[in-house]
Amino acid sequence: MKKNTKRKKVLIAGAAGFIGSHLCDRFMNEGYQVVAMDNLITGSLQNISHLFKEENFSFHHHDVSKFVHVPGKLDYILHFASPASPIDYLKMPIQTLKVGSLGTHNLLGLAKEKNARILIASTSEVYGDPLEHPQNENYWGNVNPIGPRGVYDEAKRFQEAMTMAYQRYHGLETRIVRIFNTYGPRMRVNDGRALPAFISQALTGRDITVFGDGSQTRSFCYISDMVEGILKILFGDYALPVNVGNPNEITILEFAKEILRLIPESNSKIIYKDLPVDDPQQRRPDIQLISKLYNWKPEVARTRGIELTIPYFKNKLNA
Image (cartoon, rainbow, N blue to C red; front, side, top):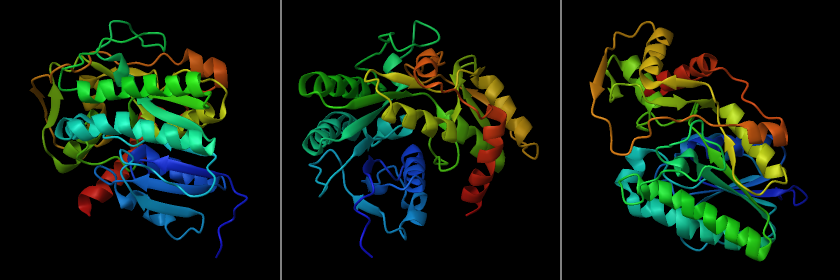
């Protein structure tokens, strides 16, 4: 069957990843023609395999750090291609820097060629180990550019600078979303971040590993809320960075205890390990800007979101 050429067309880079795959679902449900792109170094085809039968969905196994060509028109580009967990970007530092620099440059050039609007996925890590709390978009951050986490933090900071240069110099329609901790089905079990680590440890009876004394804080946003916030920013008219996350803050130690309460069959114990280098001590988004611009706020409470996520991990661990 011939694709419906009247449909709006979106390219999603990093489409086989956690957030990217949920964006594919959303755009397909909204009636778009979706071009999915991923080099699969951290993404999984299982996240999007249910879409392969759809006539308006196509997948391209490609690294956006190399020249990107998409035939025909494009209305929107979403750049979600990047390793995103410390385990990944410490193992793949060069690829992380390249996708944030060369990959961003390639996709901005494609957006300029196609006269498409582009949304860049940035991160709360641009704030580093923050000296201001909570973090709002006007805070410039406290980042160690040569520390082990710098490959991710600085790649994303460069990505934002490059995007704003294209917006100011070329008049390109650009959007930047600063994503805070997000969770839900399709996270990788071995992702390395607190939520997948704690859930998988609790489900398998292993010790739950808390780094430091567990007093560091995080804020967790459920995936459906995150997707909604991303789309509001994409379709809105504000070009500067916008935080998206859930401001409900919790210490890592309390979070570990919460996971154990929600998995009562677990016999896991909490143990403590040394804090990683440059690990942020506080992380909570100030979401006044997105609330004011787009009347967005998270709807899914953390406990409910975890309850929705646990069955996915059970299935993955038992597979």
